[in-house]
Structure formats: structure tokens, C-alpha cells
Image (cartoon, rainbow, N blue to C red; front, side, top):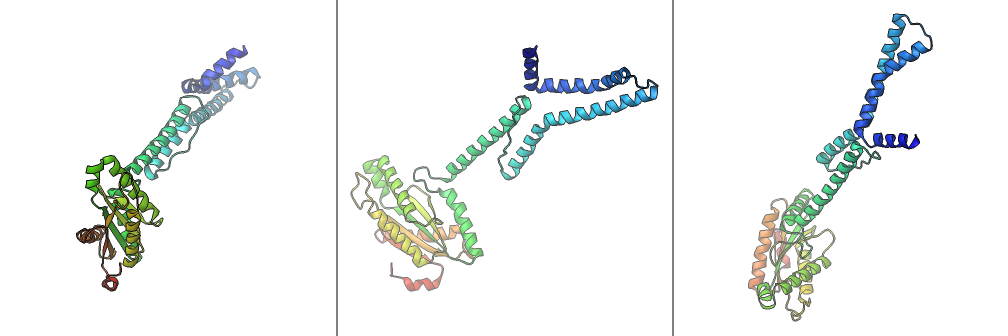
Length: 301
């Protein structure tokens, strides 16, 4: 007998349908059971007391049925609310159910599915904003982060500087030694950039061999010093089979006016300085500034 009862209980515990059937069966038979018990104990069998007992038992059965069904379906309501919250604010639901019936399976499955989806989306966002070769940001990321930094600088009335540079004669490295060596040079350049910047500076690879750095709260003089440090660090990089000093870069620096210029304006001005550095023989730093007072530091690179 015990194994049979245990097996039946296990089946009911793992089946929402059987649970609902059981609730419906019990709730609909409560009035009948109440009437049988009422008459069995010899209470007054006049119509009105009997009717009152039946009505009371019916109310009890109704309350029991509604409460039981609500408890059975409550996890689905929690999952639905969690999905709405995730879509609204991106909060991953932390719902788990110990139930083994269909509702428990759906609740746990949806929760895990949303968590997996969120992890995948986070990974895709990182991939969409990261240059996979150097580990730096890409052009799209630089546009978003750089624009936010310019807006912040305008709001707080602070300066912001831009460095744009590209590797000298990079095409000839690819042509002579192959793209694998060219990739190693780019990786080395990315590592050099990360080693020479502050934690709150933003750096990205915005083209084949072109890089951009946004320097918050950095004057023209300090930005030129950062560019010189990068230039010297790159010049001593050794990427076999390239000879020492083969990896160099030309730099354009621009200290902008965040209240009157956009990120694109500043990058364009830095690009002009970069072209000037190339015309001057490469492996050098040229700079400009929106502040006329910075002209006093001309010639002190």
C-alpha cells in the first residue's frame, strides 16, 4: 500500500494537471462531505439548517479552490513580472522553484534562459565595442565614450585633449613581412598604449593602423607629454623579425573647447596635426589648441 500511495503522490507532485484535478475534486466535494458529516452527527435536518451548512461548505470549497489555484500558478506570475522588469530596466530575475511540475520547470527554465540571454548580450556588447586584435575600444566605442567625455567636460567647464596617431610605414611591414607580423605590431602597440595611459583615459583603434586617445581634464602641454611618452615607448618596441626602431608612429594632438566643439571637431583638428607630423618626417608629435594662450608653449615639444 505504501509504495502505491507514494507513487501516486509523486505523480501528483510532478504534474500540474493532476494537482488542479485534485483541487477541483476536493473543492467540489466539500459541500457533499459537509452534508454527510452534518447528517451523520445527528444535527437538525430541517431544510434551512441543512441549506445553511451546504452554503457555508460551498464558500469554504470556493475559497480553498481559489487559494490553491493561485498558489499553484503564482510562480508563473512571478516569472511574468520578472520578465517585464528585465525588459524595462535589464535586471536579471533571481527566481528558483523547488517544484517538479510544469510550473516549476517553466519558472526555472525561463529564469535560466533570461540569465543566459543576458550573458550572451553582454558578451556581444563587449565584442561590438572592442577591437579584438588589440583589446582596445573600436571606432564605435570611441565615438560613444568620447562624446560623453566632451559633454561632461562642457558641463564642468574642463579641458579635454585628443591624440590621434598612426604607425609609420605600416603597409610596408605587411608587404615585406606578412600580415601576421603586422598583427603582432598592432598588438604590441595596443599593449604600449594601455601601459602609458591613466585608468580614466580612453583609447581605441579607429582604423587599420590608426589609434585615438581621449584625455579628460588634460591641458595641451600635458597631452603633448603623453604623446611624447607614447612615441618613445613605441620606438623602443621590438617585434621580431623587425629591427629595433622599426615601429614608430606620428602623432597629432589637439586640446579642444568642449563648450563649442564636438568630438568630431576635435578629432578632425587632431587629424590635421597628424598630417603635419607626417609631412615633417614622421615619428614626431605636432599639436594644436582651441585656446590661444597655449601658443606660448610652441616649440617646446
